[in-house]
Length: 558
Image (cartoon, rainbow, N blue to C red; front, side, top):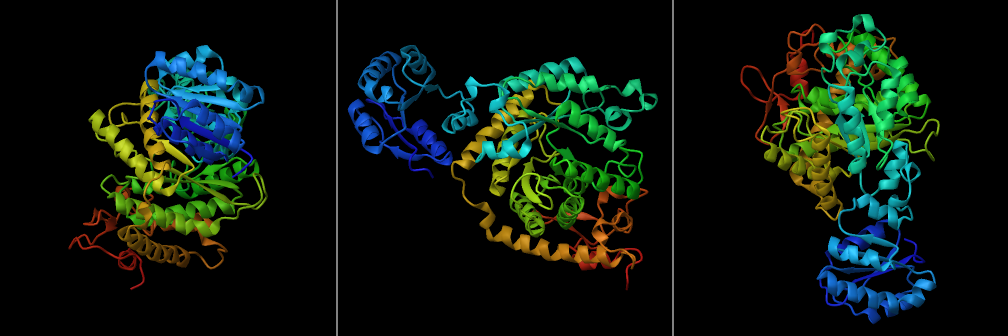
């Protein structure tokens, strides 16, 4: 904290409402100010005396009663504070919209808040970056820089992509103007993901299936141009399922892509979303990580939740999280976004869900190499990205809003750097711009409540016990992967053949891989009485340890 920066604040006159003042001072403290709170119903002269005595650089006053009375009081305040104003002390006002309108008319206050401002706008003002007075230069256009700029609040991200370019362009503009999120993740259609450079393979009947039908680099440029307004959100999109490097080059040139999302085991022939077989796709994805890493572009591996969404045991989720971070570091990624999708599968209890995420974070923490700054060769910095489960929203829209708020609050126990909002309409339809704005508004409120001082749910004994259990079980699975590598393999955890073999042999398995040509699909899972997703014996229904499950695989040593 810089003691030379002091802000004095109070509710003025007969006004006793101080919640807004307290919130302003909490933000001021996070921005490095020393704060002095004078309380409710403070006379004009007492505010000014405190400003002089404390050597205040900024004075904040609030009034939330009758506009006519407030106007007279603020005129009196401005006249009495003229000498301080002339000496360079800054003054800010906060109140209801009608009182704020009267305050603007006086022309005395440097900044006026009426309660409609996004939290980051207030925080930016306190950091000396008033967002209503600048364009793109006020909003960092690189992910890691924007994370630091917005702290202690996380970046907010949401997917968006409608079946036509025109709808999507208009929607991006509306979202940017609303200033409710920091990152728009472009949802592009399947043909764009797989066949962008192969028009002869595209099927006109699939146009717009799953997202916006981008068909040229200029389409991407126009989507980026639509975002150049409001709070200038960052853009990113899918890495595609073929021609990975060519797509990456285009994304950097046209979108200034915020970060790349790269799978390890998925988006190939195994899940029907790409032309590559399992082993080949692992190899190509590793090359893609290296390409982005060499350019100091952050990378997330959207890997663990693909196992969770396929009802894999929690331990497989944790192992996948470790293998993801391990591969990212091995292939030169410097800034790694560890993505943790809650509610996958949807039946998990909050306590067991949180334990699973804590286990994943503890597993990957030793891989971290801080370095001195962005782009440091050899550094591996881990950032936390959380999200609501893709399949977890109920169909009823009001129930879904409640789920979004509750799930977001739970995620904040991990102190995420990025919160990936999944819109409450997901169970019914792809989010419109209005849906995105509404969902982000719901999530922002939950985030603000949490940042204001939430209890530490990670200390729950049930959570800690399950975390320890998962850490021990994950080591059993990793040992099994290591043991099945061929003798000449130097590092089984990055060897494509070993990793592919871990899936085909069933070491990494999920019920949804049954009858899949690449997976085993032997594992059977259930949500146990604690709310954890565990492997069970198919005959008895009793839970299996990892050692017991692995011993039952075809070809396992007896």
